[in-house]
Length: 112
Length: 116
Picture 1 (cartoon, rainbow over the protein chains, first blue to last red):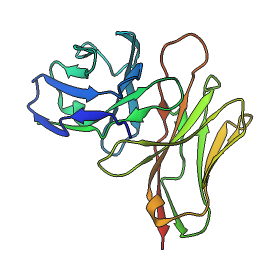
Picture 2 (tube, rainbow over the protein chains, first blue to last red):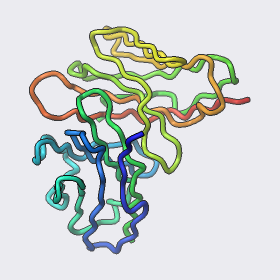
Picture 3 (tube, one colour):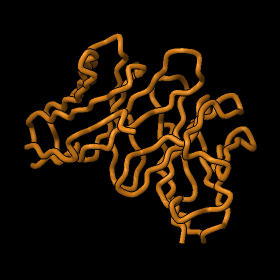
């Protein structure tokens, strides 16, 4: 069964450092998303990406965040200067059409 | 911003009985609703969805009911099994129109425990 793969599973970084979270979408999917879940809180939308550009972003997705598909397969989320409050589970999700989004297993980001 | 709410943080049912998980929403633009199941340290797994043009969708043991006038949906699991024990998230999306995004707005989740 096709699946969305995220790496790394856990990333520990110092405050102020840059991190890149990676996602390999299901091969024929067209729509890509990043969500995050801070411990004890709900899953929150960050950004959606279609046709090599951002289609929508949330208020959380400020100038410190960026996304790209550098090689047409991987889908990455970059946080330029991490803050303590960026600590969360980050989920990549992809879908072929607007029917069901498939989620990866997540990357736990810990900022110290 | 509580556009999607799951008011019951937890639910405990006996194996073989029905589990009913509830979800309310406020945004009238939502036209597509999904239920996801999540185990610890894993990503959400899609269970079942429903479009706003329907009031019921069934898939095996899972049935979702939508009451648009009340802005309420529910997930029924019959019969419940111990393996169903997980966190269940309701999610909503506004998929009509021309935007190229199927962004999901999630509820807080309900932890279901099915006792053997």
